[in-house]
Image (cartoon, rainbow over all chains, first blue to last red; front, side):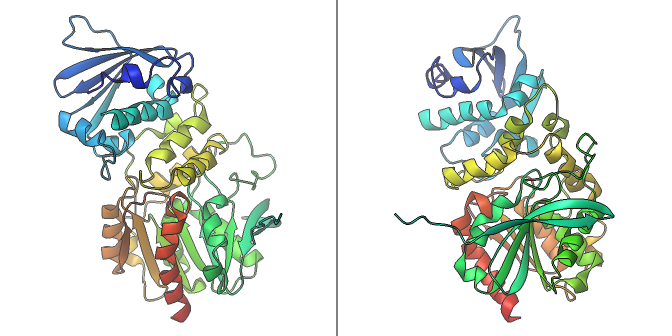
Length: 119
Length: 281
């Protein structure tokens, strides 16, 4: 679901350029599965699917598989179109250090939007 | 080459609000029935550019859009820049009445969006006989807190960037990209703590849950329009308000929290009939 981020948010991409200097270990949880997203200087360098023995991360974003799918369609329905819209419905959970997420919120939204085009 | 110049004029008025001198910036166009337009939290009057530029509306209405103090070109009153800002219902009502009084407006129509859509409910309750009609865009009696607004004003988070990102999500994905970009740009230009301070009214002080039933739409007509993609004030929230008031609600498909600025062309199709109805009533 998130593997293509290494291409859509690759070094030198427009989205990576939105977060210069951002080094971030992000986990995207889809139901029971974890996906570790390694971000360096704003670029997604690696996406690894769990399970992980000793996961270490800054921020985790969790939602059900159904919610992620509805969120990542090219034109999502109302309430499914934005990560904060999911939060409003209680469909997503943010854990860990939320500073990288909130300080780079537009970057995060653009990052997810690249999946809407790519998938 | 002919330069297109919009028929909008912008000026400053020196107005006392609750005894404090303010220099209030407003824009206007047209002549006829006064139509005061209230911008959303953390933004400014530029949101209503399309209404100000619509000849069909300005033929019959004197459209007036003022920037609230601390927003747009209306600076904070002298000596208050560093004060903590938290908008209250009383202060917001006072701003609107002060502007109407200063401009000597008789029975204006007031249209507000979001916090503006909330304050028209306060106007309906407190001063129903002063207005010809009220229009609430993205209007609800309350919005329960669903994110921590302290993120909007922190030394370690760029206020313009996060306010713009919050505003971005409230718009419909179908709205034209250029209009969505400009709408969030207004947020990116807001002063520090202003959006957060407006949220005090929206989510705490301005709660009308227990007061909506006291409003008498027989004394002042109330029109409600809400975009379907708004997750702050959802169509369901506006529907509850409409049922309590006993008035109609128009849900605007493929539109979000900022109908007048995120998709102005489509919004005008909804607004013109409402204004025509107010004019002929």
